[in-house]
Amino acid sequence: MGFTAVHADWGRLDASLDDLGCGRAWEDVHRVEGLHLACPECGGRMFARVSSRRARHFYHQERPPECEPANESPEHHLLKLELAMAARAAGFRAELEVSSETGNWRAEVLVFDEQRRAFMALEAQLSPMTPEDARMRTNRYARDGVGVCWVGLQGRPWQRAVPSLRVEYPEERGAGWTVRHGLARYTWVPRTLAGKAGWTHITCPLDDAIRWILQGRVHPHTGPGGTVWWTAPAYAELAAARTRLEADAVAAARARAAGQARRSAAAHAAAAERRLQEALLQAQDRRAEQERLAAFLEHAGKDAQLWPAFVQLVRTVSGKTVEYGGQSPAHGNGLLVYSRPHPSREFRLAGVVCPDPQALARWPAELTILVPGQTWLARIQAATRTPLKVAVLNPTTKHCTFLRIRPRPPDPPPPPWSGHSG
Image (cartoon, rainbow, N blue to C red):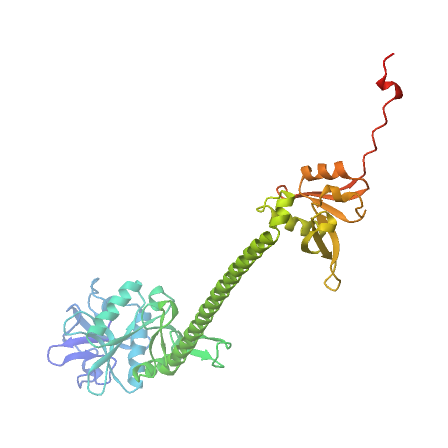
């Protein structure tokens, strides 16, 4: 069935219009014998009749399988009529089953503006269609300056690709069709990133949705992921403002991160510079100390390269703050070592490094002698006359041994007869 037919003299007839669009009455075509009407799509002979729902339409004498209007379902037929009636209720001229002059599209409902220019097609799409086909057919309309709204009854993938509405069939006769999906509003209160925001699809009568679309109160909007829906310009601007605010927040966060990275890099560079300067100062201090201790190192036979390790080992073993004085003639030209257990205490003499063994005759029993290895330990052991505390430090192995050394007993005198022969 279809809503349009062609008469040889009257031209194109539209069963949905009171005057059939050509100034004739329905009675001029309904049950009139000998009247010849043709299908505008396939040219087959058609007749006028009224359906069980009191919808006027034209039908083929023989239904051709290749003619699209002849094979429409009742739901398709009723939805197409509802779209045309909604457009007319909004104050627009709407014609059914109109083909373009070039034949590259055929609008089920074509809507015209006040200058009688076609500007919107309303398509009842109940048969399967891919998203690619939907975009291609939409672009065909767009090349001729015609927008399009696709209307379906069930959720389909193509509805996300083109401007569309998903509607619900009225449950009761006389009730209106309802839009369930395809119209959306943007909610964002308060207007800060802390507030919740998002698109919400709204439900409304189909007549209202068609009126808003034809009056330009809603426009197609492409949302996240490329999904297309109808919305008011104010909502699109609100969403754009939120997007700009998010972009500004991201840019600000990146700027802060970049600034933090620059500050961190500068801090690392400054720390590296400080470490370098400290290392240079420490090297200068070591050179100055080695120059100051040149005589002692020569006296001790100590390798100047190992002296810093020896100094560090003394600090580690003692667990105290340690300072080195100079060579002390009163202590066998050994190097004086001072320490303090706490910063509030004064430094006290704690030990002597490599004293001359000849100075051990009157050595204080609790004054530690520090020696770098077994060679010096042997010298001390050979010369001791009183009990001594000795710390043997090996800077190569990082090992320390604390010893209590006692003087060796004197050799016994020889027997009286050892020098005489029998």
